[in-house]
Length: 247
Length: 232
Ligand SMILES: Nc1ncnc2c1ncn2[C@@H]1O[C@H](COP(=O)(O)OP(=O)(O)OP(=O)(O)O)[C@@H](O)[C@H]1O
Ligand SMILES: [Mg+2]
Image (tube, rainbow over the protein chains, first blue to last red):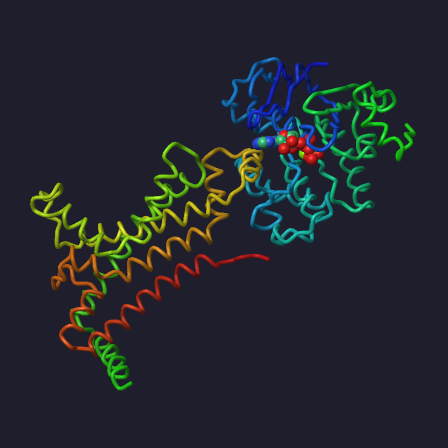
């Protein structure tokens, strides 16, 4: 497996507090990587560092084996990734406009944008919302727009921070199925933060558990879930009480 | 009451009879005010954005002075410009005192702080997370700026309107640096002051209606721009 993005002795500090301390970590091409951990563990921060959105305090980040100069990430590289942040931060404008924005910024022709947006609206079942102001959407609707906005770019790596948290159960199942299909067809590499073992179990093929800013365990999802190590057992076993794993 | 009706009658007379002098004064008022607010916007918008989005040394002191500047009495602004342009002053060689340019300078001085400060306030309310999200969508710095300006259109236009309100209402500075010279620096507000001091209340009232109409027209245009096409 050749790593797409590689972290080397990364630390991330904010206000003199170390939030991330990661000696080594990789995202490999084609994988669907899950990240789990308690609140405040540093998952969202890790996602932003991996997507070159936040600068690490020390250490190096490599893309396809090449060190990317800190604070000077080429635009073309940034544009290979897309990220749906934990909060759906939508712009004051129509849903159409919000979903189109990644393509608009990349100066795609208008006709192409129209076609693609229509396609993704359809896929997420929100075609009827196209002309609505995105600020007036419900939490679940906003989350779909947030997801569609990230996926329409067809990124090399898709970063998702708890993208299904506000969806009702049937919608979540439906969307997850569709989502899995889309990702597998497009062979998109994806990194996925979630608190939901069901989502993790269904979607990801590798899982990293992060606690207190450190990656405590990582490996194939079923193996991590079945054999937590001494530092992840307490976190994972709580979950397993409620989710007997049948996989 | 009679005075009011006289004033309205007079105003219609003046406008309908196409009084050259009134027309010239109104035109100059419009020109001076629009140029002032345009320049204030051209400087105040970028400055406000810079102050709102970035953190640098001396930023808070600068902001403090700008906020104080919002309440700068026009006569003080007029005094400063007069001293600057006085024959023996630093810019005396330009012989700009008692010219429309001098009025524009004074009006910029009183409106720039308003435009800057209100723009800054608007941009400061953009959260770090929103900035990150826009960057994450693949925006360059320039594109980010354009998105933010569009998002904050309402607040920005409100800042410009507030600045324009100050400029169109201003009289003390215009009197001092312009001198109320007929055909040269006489604008509506200074004419009104003059007519009142001469006891010509009907003319003053008529001019005040014209002034109000001008202010109303411009503000209505800006409001239209501001409130246009807000989808729900
Ligand atoms: N800019 C910042 N300044 C100070 N502290 C920060 C900053 N960003 C993150 N933190 C802190 O770092 C820690 C990790 O935050 P992060 O958002 O990565 O957690 P998380 O694992 O995503 O949590 P959650 O499950 O609640 O989303 C938290 O304690 C947070 O308060
Ligand atoms: Mg988080």
